[in-house]
Length: 184
Image 1 (cartoon, helix red, strand yellow):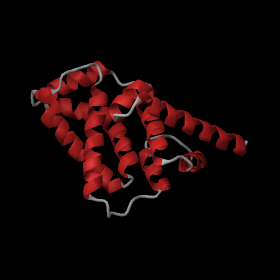
Image 2 (cartoon, helix red, strand yellow):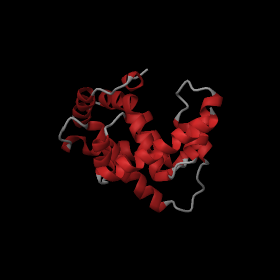
Image 3 (spheres, one colour):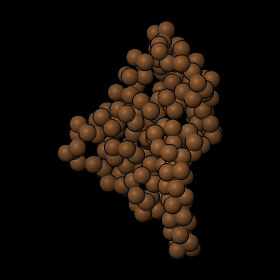
Image 4 (cartoon, one colour):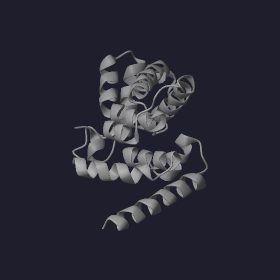
């Protein structure tokens, strides 16, 4: 199980992996992939909502990360840098593949949480809750819960004002709280 599953990803370790990749050390890439692929895939899936397109975006994102590793300058936020690359790759691919059939909410939620030990009942309830959020609210919630980033960092990643991120998050949390209260 990766460090992320225990609550955090070591930015120093990711920086070291990127340095190793810049030196053509494929073991560094393997470690980086193991630490981050589930996060980047879940993030890509939340954007494109098509499992095959998300896999393609993940692949393309890692190619771009490998290519750019030599010019990467550590600012203690390597995951933010990788999420930005992934977001831009997804947007580009999404524009190129607009006519593809997307996954249903249930399918992409299931794919994003396959590694989790969540019961089917819990997964279905989570799916129902997230269905009631709009795409922008859901993206902020998923990014916050997948990465543990602070709202300021999410604002930088999504290139949005902090107030917009906070508003989306607060609106989404209020909706989710109402849903949970109704189910009790």
